Every structure is written in C-alpha cells, then in structure tokens.
Length: 169
Image (cartoon, rainbow, N blue to C red):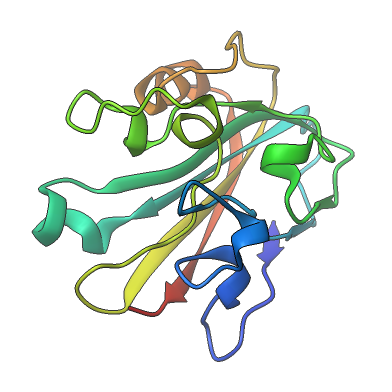
C-alpha cells in the first residue's frame, strides 16, 4: 500500500497548519485537512483508518499530540479530499483529537473532533501520518478516542503505511 500527500521538501503547505488563512481556521485553529492519495490497497480491504500524530510534541506537552484520527473510510477511496475532515467530501467517522482531552478540555465540536492542523510552538515538528487497510467496518461513532480505534482495529489490519510530514514553527 502507498500513500502520498502534497508537500514541498517534505513540508505541508501553510494552509494546512499554523499559517493558514483565516478562511482555513476556526477560532485561531487550523482546520483545513490536507489531501491523501491511497494506492495499491491489499485485496480484501473493506475500509481505511488514519491517524496523524505529532511525536515531537512530547517535550512540549508531555505526550504525543493527536491531530486527526478517522476510521471507516470506504475501501473504494483513492483520494481523501482536501478539507474532507470538516466538509464530509470523503465519508469517514472521526475521533477526538488531543484538543479535547481532559488536560485541554476543548468542547468546541469543530476543533475537538476531526482534523486540527500543526501548530508547532518550539521548533519545526514532524507529524506521522499512518493509514491502515482494514478487513472490516469498525463499530465506532464520531467522537471515539484513539485507544478505542486501536482496540477495534486489532486483528483487522491488512496493511499499514506511514509517512512523515513536516510543519514549520
């Protein structure tokens, strides 16, 4: 399985992160998700799942920061459309990101669930995008947590692929 995301020298375009225009933000938080192309999914794939995690956030927040988690993306999907997280252009069930965790306590549905873009506070950060090909549809609803997705995916992962995406301070 292969995934591609448009980047320049490995960096996401500004419109997907900290330097997004006001039109691509909600209350100062970038919310326009980037497009993802998926190719060569294995036979038997029923759905895809994805997660976008900032492991470089550990020195800043004390834990990896979840920027996006989604499941039940139809197997026929070859491109997850730009801004699909907040427009529904690509069907998916989306989970909470780290903004909604107890330490932050965000309850705004636009920024607590679905994609929130990179906003590295201390240095350029690497964001790890992982896409999973699954042999089933997961029994999850919008607002699930990453741990719930991991448990539901156990035993159903046909393939997974990751790529690192950079965002500038």
